[in-house]
Amino acid sequence: MKSDLEIAQQATPKPIEEIAALIGLAREELVPYGRYIAKVPIHTLDRLQKSPEGKLILVTAMTPTSKGEGKTTNTIGLGQALTRIGKKTMIAIREPSLGPCMGLKGGAAGGGYSQVLPMEEINLHFTGDIHAVSIAHNLLAAVTDNHLHQRNEPEIDARRVVWKRAMDMNDRSLRSIVVGLEGSGVNGVMREDGFEITAASEIMAILCLARDMTDLKRRIASVIVGYDRSRKVVTAGDIGAEGAMAALLKNAIHPNLVQSIEGTPVLVHGGPFANIAHGCNTLIATRMAMRLGDYTVTEAGFGADLGAEKFFDITCRAGSLSPSAVILVATRRAWALHGTENILKHVENVRQFGLPVIVSVNRFADDSATDLRDIASQCREAGVEAAITDFRESGGKGGLDLAERTAVLCESSSDFRPLYPLESPIEEKVATIAKKIYGAARVDITTRAAREIRQISDLGYASLPVCIAKTPASLTDDPKISGRPRDFSITVTGARVSAGAGFVVVYTGSIMTMPGLPKQPAALSIDVDAQGNISGLF
View 1 (spheres, rainbow, N blue to C red):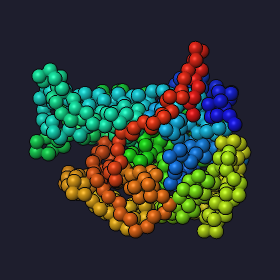
View 2: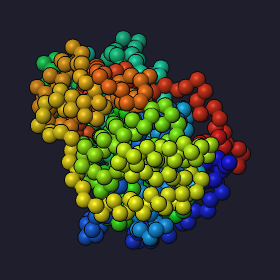
View 3: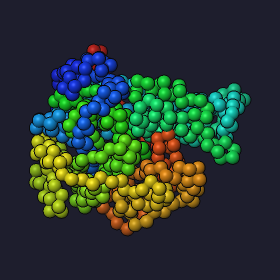
View 4: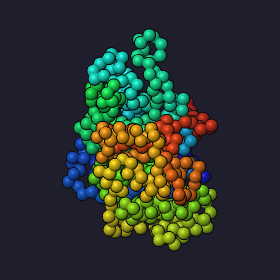
């Protein structure tokens, strides 16, 4: 069986101008990055406002295993399958983070004959968007520390700086650091600090939720960097950093146009994680895709308890989006770990938002056909449509049945609605998600978390949606608990407000914003030869 990289390297992509022409984009509306990648300037949306919005399809999943269940592969494969049955289709997905690429999961550009091209560039540096986010984030950190060192106004209490640094890599050693050491003050104010991965940066979330450059700058200006001695908020706008930060993002704000291995147009833009951030590609790319195609297939990270809930309660609210259908990916290996009850819980979660759902039973090469039929049969017996798909090995042909059913489902009536009203207290929003989506019986809030939630509410941010940081490996906050557990509690360990992104981050269990590398990271298998050909990337 060929690897993803071998399949990608043997493919013959079309010039990006040809892909753009398929969806009505003129050559003048592209900013090329080589032959097969182009940025589509955001102002193209102004022209596209005259075009009707197409149907929006979200791909999510059951609780995954540590290796992932092929959700991106299903997203790309379904887009290709819809194209094969004559539908004008766009795909909108996130940019891969280098952390997972060099860590455990490997790349995130799909797999086999359902992936996006050029695979190497997309999985590595691509057009530099994630680097731009890192630099903009770290500019604010540098300006904040200089503000402290120079004792500029407004005053920031060095003990209450909340803005960390960021890098696009898994590095546990940087979770907690001390800055300003030695030099008798020449090296700045000594204080505790730390790093988070760029995919968890609020700047990444802002890029993914902003409607345009004006909105981007407004959101950046609202970012809280710390507090003064009276616990009054100090923002990026207060210290004058938003203009330069936005300037660093002036190219990153434009969506990236590429193609699937079968030539379906794909917008790859933005990359927040779903366990510690909101887990969806940019709102700009999704809105653009919906104007360029009759059907847009997008995805949300991890299971429906994380990415899908955040897509519905955060992204759809921010962009006034109303999805038409949901595809829930299930696999034999995740089924073996979690059981059919887990699949049905995630189906129940989707239906709570008033949306129709189909289960895609995603085939891996060594799966037993009997097992796959059993999974699909159990879903149907429980009243859920299910289709066995083979997108990795067969491309779009491996999901024509799913594509036909999805197109029909998009025409059925839906009653999309968020899970909770924004005016509810923060604690009530958390309890609603924990009980209705995770299936928890109760929520335990630590003393520290209660104090932080109270402070956030007192500062006037209680009406924001919540973004719960939780392990993706379980419906609970304990990654070791599989299946569909009942009568458990969710422990809230902390909270902070992402005022620029427009949500309150609530931490559960022992979730961290900077992952570590595994014992044998994927990076140790990656190499490049004298001609620049990459190997080992998967």
